[in-house]
Image (cartoon, rainbow, N blue to C red):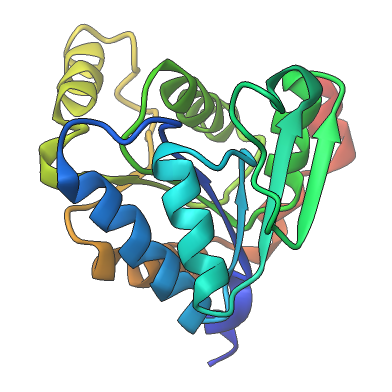
Length: 204
């Protein structure tokens, strides 16, 4: 099953706070354990607080590998986690996001705020424009992402998302479904579309 090995690293976007629902931290911790046990490395924003800290600590505690990527101006505010295997400090947010993208085979959004939403939506935008075919999944813990899913449905109904356009967003209500769904999606993505032809990339 060579396909199983396609996802070696997952970029997880999530809140730098814990949120009000204890299930959010539980989910982050549980998913960190799943990643470590499956030999999947975590790429994340480098913080030690909230859901970010919970998932990174869980991956490390269960013997997994963590890469934190944080812009210089956030190192103090988000308390960069010292235990990560690799901490990359970038000059700005753009470089952070580019590196997070380049080092990841898939993207998962756990609950979070505007920063989480922005990073998630950027990946969906790039996917829609044909810049990548890496799977993007919403971890819809306790229905957290329902308002966003409703907004996407509304955008489609009002034809700002054109009928011919697939917004290929995966969804999992339960932590144990996340990795199987990402793997299934990665196995479906044709190999040749992963790396865009340079002439197509230049046109975008």
